[in-house]
Length: 244
Picture 1 (tube, rainbow, N blue to C red):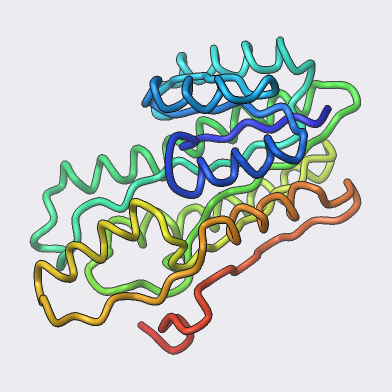
Picture 2: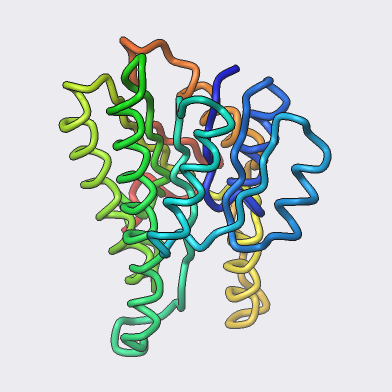
């Protein structure tokens, strides 16, 4: 049975992706801070394991990896997904503490998970595996008022490229999925903010979050000699091309 560890698995893209892999027969490690949500999901599947932890805590994440690999025998895929948007607005209205929080989750947290996954994949036999980072369309073009989130997601593109290069000698592939406007709690919150500022605002086009989840499964199922380096999956009519 193939194994995958998913961070941010309690909601949004992480939860939808976890369900997609569980239904496909993978052994799935569910990582997030909300224990209740993870245990509820794991209770419905024999191939799921709830692993509550804060992705920014290196010791807690090390215990997560040890426990999951101890049960699964190896780690085939990490979906490095946990992230947050943070406050919206021009940079002079963003508290430094809020910026630090976004960077802590979106960069530090993803670095910690990738570091542990890389180490496991490097030493396991047979050697190798796959790391899939959740980027964003904001890794390429920002939406207004997103300086914290956009800065962090540009960094993730650098992380993806570095892991792809450094993983070659160890059979470790790394790819990035950039998702635009999948219907999640995060996007619902962005819509809520937009309506608060302007009740007449036109809400963003959406796609079903399951379409994003199936795209992650496609990336994970590639054979070892093939890799989806970057994939963009977005609501068809969202203003991405040409925005800035």
